[in-house]
Amino acid sequence: MMNEVTALKFKLSALSVFRGVLGRSVPRAFYRLLCASDEKPETFLRCYGEFFSLISERGCADSVAEAFTEAALFDDNVFTRAAAGGTLSQLSDEVINAALGDCNTVIEASSLDSEAVLRSYPRYDEISEVVPFLPRWKTGEPALGFRTYDGSAESLKRWYSENGCGIFAQYNAFIWRGGGIQPVLNSDSVDLDDFTGYERQRRLVTENTLAFLDGKSCNNCLLYGDMGTGKSSTVKAMANAFRNRGLRIVEMPKEQLREFPQLVDKIARLPMKFIIFIDDLSFQHQDPSYTALKAVLEGGLAARPSNAIIYATSNRRHIVKERLSDRAMEVDDINTRDNMQETLSLSDRFGLAVCFTAPGKKEFLRIVISMARQRGVDLSDEELCAGAERFALARGGRSPRCAKQYVESLFC
Image (cartoon, rainbow, N blue to C red; front, side, top):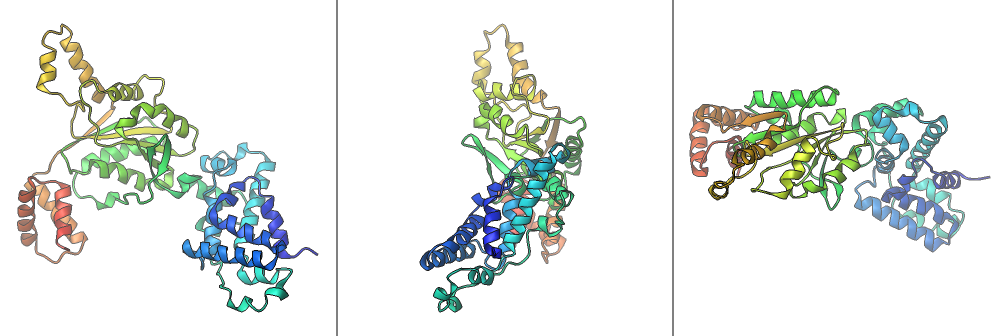
């Protein structure tokens, strides 16, 4: 009669919809260990040691079930994409049943402990003397998305609808690099509650973002103004605040704007929604990327898809850097006015432009005091204000960034 471990090995071999799970390191090493039950003792023990070494390196020797089930949660397949996009009803019963069968197999595998694996080895008598010296792992709890799994598609649907699928379930922030979307492993965790001041500006951006998520009329947004006023942080905070509504952020370097059609191709069919983030946007006169961005914003063949919105930051309202020499070159140009309109037209293509100006003294000190109190600084308002003014003077100006740096300096 087939034992438990052999049956599980066959089930893992037959994974179909979630077959990508076996491409992940922990499930792959575990499957290799189960397959080694047919091998000689040296091979079996080597696979056992390799598996334990791997889970030790991954920090999951006491939570193998979490690592195993996470591999399924983060798998990119037809079922997870449909669950994330709310289109499970479009899948056939055969595909759904196969996916649920795979999930059951993953959970069964994740709950198999070291004792069961060792005892099932057909040549156990030959290794019995070394078994007491072998390390043991703990299964622990499955990953969050599987803790409420009851064998039905509906029990997984909510998790995927809130967290997305594939790599977009695992990470929140990405960057376009080398022709692909790469995850940012340590993304900025800034939250909307971290800010003091600029309430009107952030309200405008928040309302626009919510309209985008709700499928209502929304605009590409340009956040412009003085340095250190929180433009980039505001955009990142949007992605963090609305992660559970399927929002992700992909930063596209300005130098690679001509690759925008490639980015569009990769995200257009995904069930999540995306902020395409262009930070510190500015162009030199006649910069080739300038024309590429204009086409993206309005009227080009590579216009943004319906599940994406463009948020850009710039220190300049009109984005293009102009020099006196540029104006001198246009003195003899009978189309000077047309050239000027061309220069200004890019910023006008952002339907929403939000200005962040450097705070005055009163507002700056209000920001300092608020940040200090949040961090538990035990200084009076008068002491904080005096120190903040000296700090800002030494750095050449007041800004929220300067306020944050001053408060952080108090802990050095």
